[in-house]
Image 1: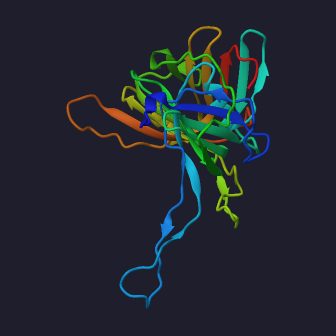
Image 2: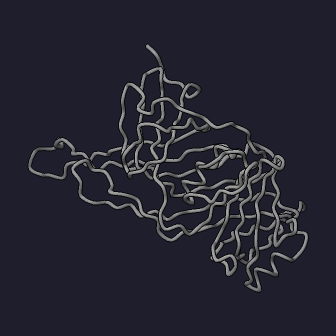
Image 3: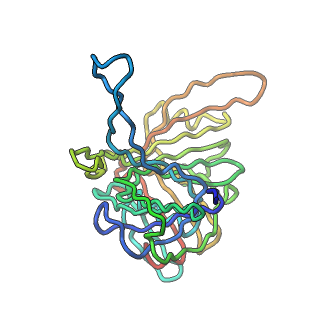
Length: 312
């Protein structure tokens, strides 16, 4: 009897033209580190009395399909997740191509994602997947990954794939060594770690249906938050926090002229942190920042991915 192993698992992704309807072709095999994407249907215990001490059979509740996918931040495949989070990019250039993703889109694309465990076999197709949140961390070392939080409409399980023949993009990963942070155009020094979280604030449309699934997931108010932990060496960030003025933060990774990823938060506001002295070691300060819509450009953030992919 075959047993499922994560090492043999695969994931294929395609964007839907109709929400909740899996396309027949056009799937790409995408690299991932782990996933909690799945469907569950809890049971509701019986509340009825007068039938003795032993409870009656429970009834089924609604179906919930959602979860996280941890993916590498790479040169080509990461564009698929940026499209899911921000919408269709504007692509310019010849070689390389520059794909520009902007916040503030009123509509977001939905995806069909199939996770495969071929040794069982089990092929689970999740339709109506919409990206609720995309987040990542920056550090001095380790693997650079992002977490995409998805809200799906439902799950269909089969013994054979429904994704047809897959294609794939090249995998060339960015690393923490290739990253840099700038503030208002100047390098931000003494940074220990940083976090970035973009949220679409999805609103699940929970209508009454015979299949127990949601009707859709509409984007609400977007939010861009994060955290920067720095060694306390100057008062520039604290002065900004006290003054209440915004700054521009740019998180960038580069592997050369044809491979780069730049994420710009155009108007970042910093809170006034508590400066503690925990002991004889170096003093650190943590800023839980929030971004807002800037005056120019009139949006909250911009993500630019440079590679050789023709279009997303």
